[in-house]
Structure formats: C-alpha cells, structure tokens
Amino acid sequence: MLRVSSLLHELVHRATTWNKTPITAAEYRLARVIIDEIASLREEPLGLPRPSDERLCRIVDAMLADLADNRSVGDLAEWVGITPRTLARHFSEQTGLGMVAWRQHARVLRALEMLPVGQAVTTIAMNLGYDNVSAFIVMFRRVMGVTPGE
Image 1 (cartoon, rainbow, N blue to C red):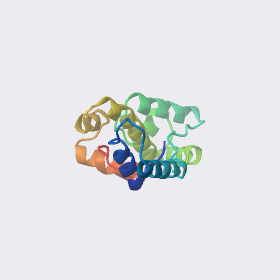
Image 2 (image 1 turned 60 degrees about the vertical axis):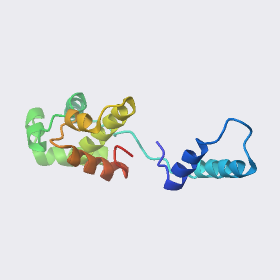
Image 3 (image 1 turned 45 degrees about the horizontal axis):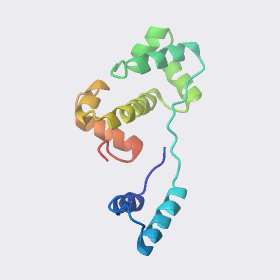
C-alpha cells in the first residue's frame, strides 16, 4: 500500500478531467510530476505479524474469525490457559505489537477490504465491533493517517 500525498491526489484529480485527445504541453508536464510523485511514495506495511506460539495462534485465529469479538486480554488469556501478563509479554515479543494494537490493525485491514465495495462506514464500524462510528473513525485515522471516507 502506498500513502498518497495531497499534491498527488490533486494532480490525479486534475488529470481525470483531461480530454482523450493528445495531451497539451502543460498536461505533459503535469503527467511527469505525477510520475515523479508516484516514484517518491512511501510504502506502508499492510500485513499483520503472526505469532509462533500455538496458544497465541489460537487467539489470533479467533480474533480474525470474529473481529467484532471484544474479549479482553484477561478473557483471552484465561481461554488459552495462561496469565494475562504472560500473554501480553509473549504477544508483544512475537508480533511487535500489543494485542489491542494488533486487533486495531486487523480491523483496519478488514475495513480496507469492505470500503471499496461500497459498504457504509457505519455498517463497517458495527461489523467490526465498534459501538459507534466515531470511535471507529478515530481509530482508523490513528492507524492509517486518513479517515475511512478519505
């Protein structure tokens, strides 16, 4: 995934208004800027690290199967038979993320699958376990740097 700058967004928007006829000299220059901007884009990681511990894998699989499941770290630790502190420590060591951050990233990835097919942001938020759309939008912006609508 690439993070698009405001400049590139506006340039592409402008380019969509061009006629199909051969482009003008000004359009050609703008097209070169678009190419330069695309070449300088930063790649954003989009995957989620998976733990190696079998107990943690059980938790990850359960979370991915139902991202609306809001069980606490304590509840999940009890479910797999370890202490919450051990779960948190091992999860962080093996994935580089805390469980809350990991679940948020998983939810954002799922939202990114749902947004292009035209699902409403409110529907997505509810399907991912959020009580209100505002909390989902705040989390999405914190993770992605833009709102779901953007």
